[in-house]
Length: 300
Image 1 (cartoon, rainbow, N blue to C red):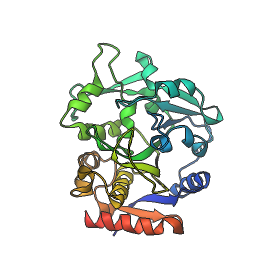
Image 2: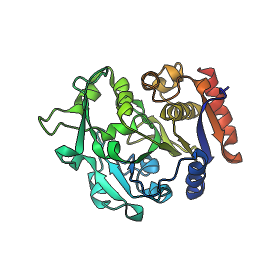
Image 3: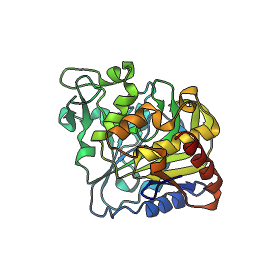
Image 4: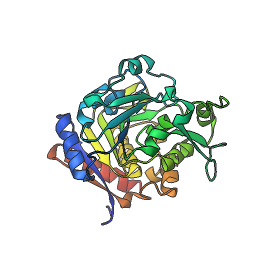
C-alpha cells in the first residue's frame, strides 16, 4: 500500500500510442516547455523493433509534446551491438528536432564529473547538452540486461550520456563500468548528474530474459511514466516479475537491488515500495496494475 505522499507512476494501455503518451503527459502535469530547449535521451542502440519501442524510430511522433526546441541524443551506451547505420540515417527527428550522435561530440561537448563519493575510479565525462538543457525527457524500454546490469530501464538509460573514452587520453569509461563489481551502483551514480523531468517507459513489448539487444519477447502493451526514476524502475521490475524473468530479477526485494538501493541513497527517488503509487489511467491496464502492486507489496 502506498503512502499519501507517494511518488506516482502512471500506466496506460498502449493500443493507441499517441493517445497514451498525451494522457501520460497530461497526468504528470509538467510545466510548459514552450520556448525551452528540451534534450531527449532516447534508448536507441540496435535496429530491433521491440528494443527501440521506447526510444527508437517509432517513439518520435508520440514524444513531440514539448513545444520548445528539441535535441535528441543517441549513443550505444557501451552495449556490444550499436546502431551506427541507423544513427547516420537519422540526423533530423520529428518536427525538425536535432539528432545528436554522442560518440561524435567534440572534447568541449563533455563535462567532467569528479570521482568524489562515487564508485567510478576517476569520475566520468557526461554530455553537456543534458546539463545545459532547460528540460530533459528520457524514453526507455522494458528489458533485462545480460551483461551485468540485470535490468535496463530508466536508471540504465543514462549510461548512454557518458563518454565511452576520454578524448584527452583515451581512457575507456565503458571498459571500467562493465568490468567493475560495482557496475550497477555506478549506473545509479550517473543519474545523480543527469537531470530528468520525465521518464517514459515503453512496455508495449519488452525482453523478460536476455537483453539488451535481443531476448525473450513479452507484450505487456502498456506505457509507464513518472518524474521519479526509482519509482519507475521499481514498477518496471514488478512488471518483469509479473511475466517471469531472470533469477537476478526475480529474487529478493525490489528495493534491495543494487541500482535501486544506490539511487535511493543518492536522493534520486523513493526509498521504498510504500513510497510509490501505481496509477492506472484506463480500465484496460487496471488488472495488470493491481498485480504489479501486489508484487511490490510482497517484496517490500
